[in-house]
Length: 110
Image 1 (cartoon, helix red, strand yellow):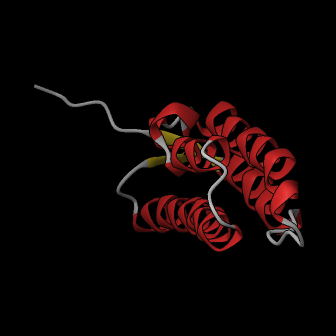
Image 2 (cartoon, rainbow, N blue to C red; image 1 turned 135 degrees about the vertical axis):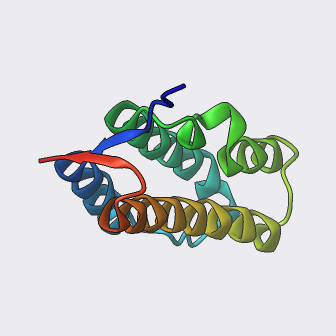
């Protein structure tokens, strides 16, 4: 039985990484977390659309926890931590996919 391997595009991965790098991951006030939350959701959606990887599905990612914390009106410190978790998750997953592509464990194009 032949198993199908995941296939990712270098240009799509670079586009996602550039978007993550271009995002400002800090907020000054707790009230700014609401708008930042949906900016982060756009990043997760972009990465999902570019890679078609379920890891970036916003409903099953750290973004869902961030949204819950924003809706609960958690402290700024807790919201900052959730925002940092989203950033770390995106960066780590994109780096992991790039490492898998270099190692030949997944198929890659461009």
